[in-house]
Each structure stands twice: as structure tokens, then as C-alpha cells.
Image (tube, rainbow, N blue to C red; front, side, top):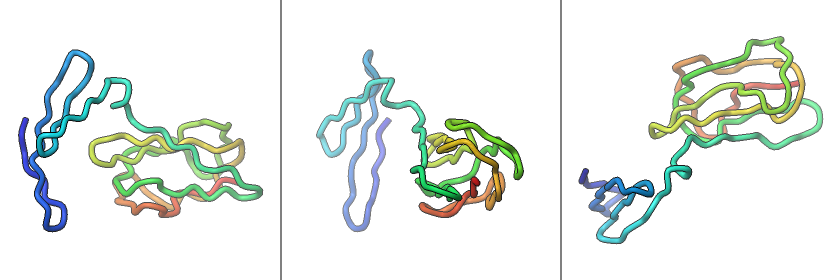
Amino acid sequence: MKFKLKIGSKEYEIEILETEEGAKIKVDGKEFYFKEENLKPKTFLPKKEFGEKKILSPVAGEVSEIFVKEGEEVEEGKKLLVILAMKMENEILSPGSGKIKKILVKKGEIVKKDQLLLVLE
């Protein structure tokens, strides 16, 4: 698959090829290799803080799933929601045990990087 990508005033020629090990991407003739295990969705675990934990979006994208409700008790590492960004699913996990105090987004909503998603107490 070949296509052109324009960032600002610079245009890049991109070619994506599958290989036995994963994928090869050529950008203006330079080759980059990706193994299959490196192409899996990213998982984000917010930083731990004392008191309320404000969970911010690590990326701009669309909230594709919400797995919790306000008032629900959660354990550390529980999947809270998923943000779809550039066709990648970014799982947002609970940074600790606690109760979901407030959910500030809805499924299908477009969020910005560092936007407040929910509050855990």
C-alpha cells in the first residue's frame, strides 16, 4: 500500500509492506521494521496520587467503550475505558483501588489529550 502524507508544508511518500516478522514501512525510501508484538494496542495506567485520582486522557481520540459506572468500586488495573486514536485502542486502567466518583465523558465523545475523563476516590 502506498500513499502520500503531508505534515505542514512537507510531503512524505509512505509504503507499508507485510513481512514474515511483522511490517515494514518505508518513509521517503528509509525502511522501518515493526514486529507484531509492537503493534498491539497501548495500555495506559495513570500516575498514582494521594486522595482523588484524576484520570486524564493520554491521547486525543474517541471514547469507544466505558466499562464502569459512577459509584462502582474498582481494583487497581481494572479496565475503565477505551479511547480509539488512529485506529488503535488505548485502554485506560485504574491506577489504584477506589470508587468511581465522577465520569465526565460519554461513549462516542471526542476527547483531547489531557482532558479529564473521570475521578476516582
